[in-house]
Length: 241
Image (cartoon, rainbow, N blue to C red):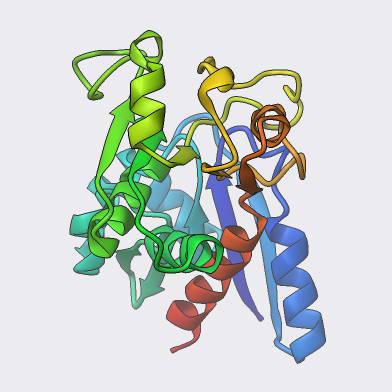
């Protein structure tokens, strides 16, 4: 029986084991999926081989730092600048990014081919994949960070004029994720309108405070659950081929 898993920290919020184990049961696949909450990934290679894992998903905060452990990487990783899926092939770790494909499809389902420009909140691994997807889709974007050396502007730099020019807002940070559900990115929600599409990569809780505040302003909103399912299916395609 093959073993798969999710590596990240913390993992109390994740739905991935339930998703995959239910999939395996329904489709008669002899495999198991487990969450591994690791505070340190220094010995990642040893951990994967000792646990005889055939494939691994990667989540916060390791999507970027995990790249140095890969023996090979799919070409798409260079655009996503992060790895969220690993396939183990005869002692070789091959890195992939399924977030980019999943976000692109989920976003297209939401906004279709309407003209868009995006405000990306965050600079981590998830944000890197989102930026890659936006570039593939030809959607211009601004990156918002607490550090001006990393992003295009800080949260305090968000103005009414910017929100008038950018109609898509994507939260790529863990702010608002369970159990810290009363938190939300500190942006001027009063500048959000019915003309905006607001996307939160978080899927637990179903409606984050970020999405609730945006919805109160009339915005169209979507959480990250569909994206989770899409990237999980993409991961399975990689592992099973």
